[in-house]
Length: 332
Ligand code: NAD
Image (cartoon, rainbow, N blue to C red; front, top):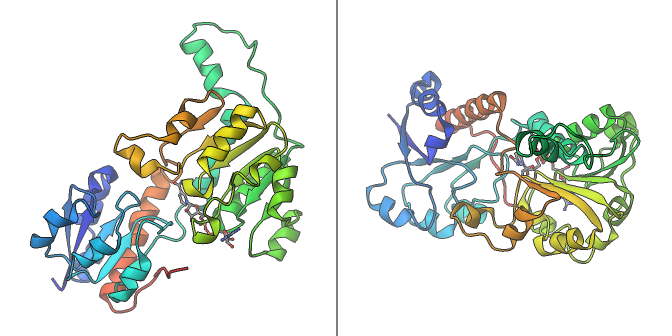
């Protein structure tokens, strides 16, 4: 075999392990497949490095591949992340060693937007509280469970890329008015879907529900922050299925406590990496708030998306092995 790829922390992918191990495409491209139980990061690489015989690494967002991790693996030539986001990999450090990094750009457009709507509907119709009424309180009553219609309300979509576009379409399907904010305006799509692009502050002021779909970049770090969050319409809802640090946690807690924000649905948290280790800081306060639903970065997680991720990753690895890499991400 000309190449060997080690997939890190791959037990989480369940039957995906066999799928990768038995891939005829990988075998035909001369790629041997191995698995490591641990994550690939600064804490694990020291023990891994002496015996590291792989030239390719397959990782997910929970492996934080920083400059030191890359430096500790002199044979590493290629990284394939099984995610759309790539902010867990130090791209300049990889580029400095001529290590291309591939991602899966388009597995979960509808999948993630559907999850954003699952959070929106759970909040708008008090699904969690309704279920607790019957299941925990053993009462079949609806007092105190009054929600609100989505039809006629305004959905603010922050980021109208692949996922955001599905959120726009879904919002339209519910009879919502749409406003959007993006540094890039897709005017043809805006015309087709009949929505305006507006400045972020205006979006915050006009929206009943705000849903975030930008990548995490230096330019989107704390895009929603202590300075602008006070501009939200009183009682509005915030949903984040993109990346935790796009939203300043302390600022969100503040407006949730004051009632300026009616509630939040968060699939991603600023400190989710620490949380996986069992350490919760400020995010603990968020998790425990009654008008907040937190899910464990689960928006991508459907059977259909799962196989799209695995298939695209196989294609990415094969393309690199054949000397014509695809889906390579660039530092931004
Ligand atoms: P995309 O690249 O298609 O779209 C992103 C949009 O954000 C683009 O239109 C871009 O112009 C816009 N944008 C970039 N910088 C901006 C800025 N500073 N201000 C405003 N807009 C800006 O990406 P996508 O496929 O729609 O995915 C969006 C993000 O969703 C991913 O980067 C990833 O972090 C996240 N995601 C989360 C999950 C999950 O399981 N929770 C799964 C997949 C993706």
